[in-house]
Image (cartoon, rainbow, N blue to C red):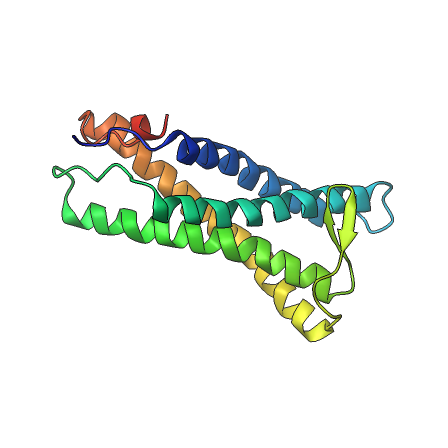
Length: 176
């Protein structure tokens, strides 16, 4: 029997992480424009780091679930170039979902600012300004790359749903 949907665990992780990613990118963008002396600026940074660390941990969980769970296969009707594009897109989504929060962790912790996980703070790296600067450079660029891949992912989903109009190619129903 062909699997029609992703497992409930994968679907919940997908949608929760999608909301988390968009929220983190939006707050990151917003934080860039806040003056250094603004009240509550560092509270927002603390929340951003907490949810970013949550995303990092969920990516690890999701990767384990993905490699240990069955997944619906891509339709035989789907052209091979679309299958290759889908696989490449998912590869880069996972890669970026891992490296965006990791770069933030490195930027913050190596920069001498402890990691925040909601109501606790801790360090895992020694202070290293050069490493923090590299993390900051990646953390400044990678979220936009991730957002671009998410937009392309969304375009692919919408194409299958509204342009192809073939229920067998409708990948959205597998994730709902």
